[in-house]
Length: 178
Image (cartoon, rainbow, N blue to C red; front, top):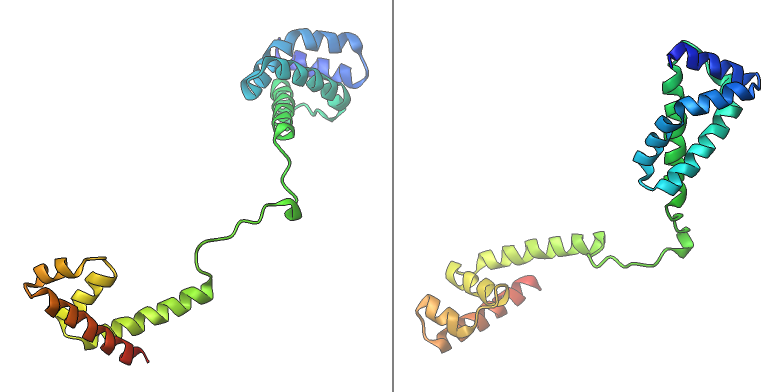
């Protein structure tokens, strides 16, 4: 059926012509069913959607304007919109704000991050006042988790010497930070 014939049927439907409506249905229902089925992916819902599409066509036929869009494009748009409306309707409603579960953010708040940032700059400054190898040993022990024995082997010093380095370095850090 040509676009002009479809436009003529829609114009007659706008006047309440049931014969024109029946002819339009027989000529376009398969196409509109395909459109809704492709969107909804459920045969029963697509059938319901097509039924509602033709109700909308009956009610809105007077709003169709020849020349603005082709008749088939107008019909397909109605079918597409109906299918999308059904998808939206089956999605769960959004929770009300008061019904939303309280979920705490485990990350520090902005104030805590600012304090941590300032503290880390202070610690870095104080570590800079230590001898380079002793500062590296403190970082390796307390940030990387290396044991006294591992550090003693890494720096080729006796175990008790490493303990003394770390103890004295921590005392200097504490004094610097206070």
